[in-house]
Image (cartoon, rainbow, N blue to C red):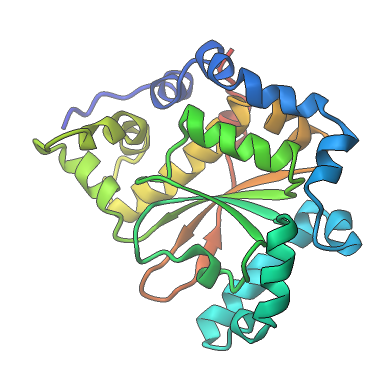
Length: 252
């Protein structure tokens, strides 16, 4: 694979659709932000306490859940399923959105020890941002009122491995590769786990930079977007920082 290096600005442009194209694809979803209280009322939160959660509190809740999962002491399965089903029939009350890889070894609700209705999950191989993923998470932010978004890669990711090896593959599989290449170019060691971490960071930044809905909530302190990696061997989730240079390199 070529050793060519790219500036952060060019790398972000390579891994995301242009701002104009993304916003065009998401025009209908972006309009959700103007629906106001009526839209929020139509999709009730779980409790008043849920609505009052800060982004940090929402993240702490799921990370505490992951700690229980790692310790082999989950509690989500002990909750009254009949009550949860009844509430789910009336609406959803997620507090956190997740962009995860599609890998079957990453069962998101189990990883964070959360019951039905608490996580708003989007999944795609390589946990990459696409117009459809961004649109879905904008809905979660603008209508459902989620307080945080976790962009989560994982160890032993097949999409990362395939993008690094760039083999001849059938069908549409190779369509994933361009969005992962920036992480490869920005990781001199070419270590797969290091690439996975960089990929999560890039797409967390891209999610903010490509969405006016999400960016506005982040800037207002009402939403946090964090990259993370899940270790398949230990079940532990590690939250990562977004470098300032990537966060400020918006696609104009």
